[in-house]
Amino acid sequence: MKNPKYPENLSRRLFLQASAGAAALAALPAQSQAKSINTNARVVIVGAGAAGISLANRLARQLDGATITLAGARQAHLYQPGYTLIGSGLWPEKKVQSTTDEWLLSSINWVASDAEAFDPERQVVRLMNGEELAYDILAVATGCQLNYDLIEGMSADLIGKNGIGSVYAGPQAASATNSLIENLVTAGSGRALFTLPHTALKCAGAPIKMTFTTLSRMEDSGNRDGFDVNFMSPNENRVFGVPFYNEFVLNRFQEQRVALHNQVRLTAIDANAQIAYFSQADGTTKAEKYDFIHVVPPMSAPDAIKNSDLVWQEGGMAGEWLEVDQYTLQHRRYDNIFGVGDVAGTPFGKTAASVKMQVPTVEANIINFLQGQELSAKYNGYTSCPLITGIGKAMLAEFGYGAELMPSFAFIDPKKESWAVWVMKEKMLQPAYYAMLRGRI
Amino acid sequence: MSIQGILIIVLYSLLPWWWLIALALLAVILTQIFHRRSDNRVAQPVLWVSLGFGGLAMLLAPALTHSRLSYVSIWPDWLALFIVGVGAAIYTYIVLSPVWRSKKLP
Image (tube, rainbow over all chains, first blue to last red; front, side):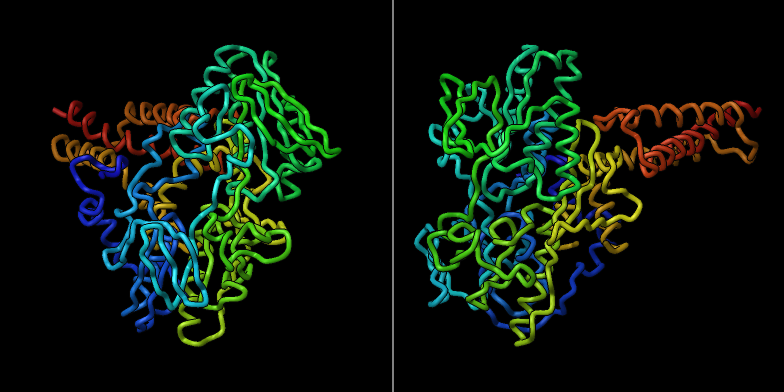
C-alpha cells in the first residue's frame, strides 16, 4: 500500500533511497544511547503499534545475531495523535493511515497475530493463531484496550449515530465524530457533553482538545449562545493531571461557558433516546439529555495481559495495567520482560512522545540485561501533549513524574498559547513520529 | 533533543514537499540561466514587490495553517512569522530580479 503522503509514482522506500538528503542523514547512526552487541537471543515483541515497531527497528540494528519477532495482527498502521485533528475537521482520514510492513526493517520477523496468553514461567507467548513463541527477552507493547462495553448500551458501532462521537476508536470514528459536530454546529443550537473516564487513558489531553476545537467551531458559527456545553469529570475540579494545565483549562472553561460537572462517571447510554446516565458521588444516577456526546471509554491493558500474571497484582493499577518499574520499564517480577507504550502501568506516559522516550530506555536496558549489567537507562515519565486550546493555537505541555514540567525547547514558554506550537502539532509531529518509527530519533 | 534529532525531524517534515521544493529551485535556476546579465544593480521595483510579497506571506501564513493572526502571541511566533516573510521576500527577489534586469538592459 502506497503511503498517501508521498509521491504516487514512487514507493516510499524508493523515494527515501533516491533523496540525497535522506541518504546523507540515513548514513548517520540512529540515535541510541546503547552500544550494539553480538547475541543469539530470541527477542519477542508483542504489539505492532508505534512502540513495538520502533523498538523492533532499534533492536534489529543493535543486536547482531538476535532473532527479533514482532507479533501483532494489525496490517494498517495508524497515527493516533491525528485523530483529534480528524475529529475537528482539519485532517482527512487517509492522512493518518499507512501499513505496518512499510515501517519494519527486513530482518524483523513479523507475525500478524495478536497475543492470546502469556506464560512467563515457560517463557512462551501463545498467539491467537495458535502459534507459540518462545523468548529470551519479551517486550510487551500491546497498547491499551478501549472498553466501550463497560458503558451499558454503548459499543464502538454506535459512533457516528444518535449523536454519539468518540475519536479514540479510529480514523473512521474520528471522521464520523467530526460529521456529528458539523451537524450540531449547523443546527445552531444543542446540548453537548464531553466525558472523561475514571481510568487512566491514552492522550489525556484529547477529551479537552475535542472540547476546545468544538467550541472554536461554535464560536466561529456566530451561534455560541445557542449551545449548552458540558464537561463531565469523574474527579473533583480536576480534568488534567498537571496542576498548572488543570487550572488553566478550568479557568478557560469558565471563560468560554463550559459547565463542569464533578464526580460523575458515564455508566450507560440510551442511544435511541439520546440520554446518557452518570453515576454520582452520592451513589445516585443522573440522566443527561444530549444532542452530541463525546464518549471517552474506560481503558486498560488488553485482556491477554489482564488475564495473565504480568498484570499489577496490587495497588491502584491492580488487574488493569502491565506491572513494570516506572524508571527502568522492566517487569517487577520477571526480569526478562519489559513494557513500553500505553500498556505500561506507570504514573504517566500514555502518549506518542512518551514512546519516543521509553523505547530508547527499554532498548538500552535490554542490552544491559543481555550483558548481565545493571539497567542504567531510566525513564522519567516524560509525556507531551500539545494542548490544543482552540483551532489554531496550542500550548506545549511537557511533563514527567511528579507532574514536573519538562520543556524541550527553552525558547517556548510551556505556559503560553502559541501559533508556533499549533504549527508544530499540525505539521511537524507526524514526521517526527515517522522518524521515531524508523528508530531514527 | 540533539541537533541531529532536530535535523532528522526537519528532513522528514520536508520530504512530502519535495516536489514543491524542486519546483521552487527549478524556478530559481531557470531565471538565472535564461535571464542572467552581468548587471548587478539592485532591481528597485522588484525589491518593493518582494517586500510586499513577504508582507503578504506573513499575513497569510497563520491562515494557511488553519490558524489566525491574532493567535501569534509569544516571541517565537513572531520570529517564525518574520522568517516566513523574509524568506518569501528573498525568494521572490532572487526569482524576479534577473527577469527584470533582462527586460531593462538592451
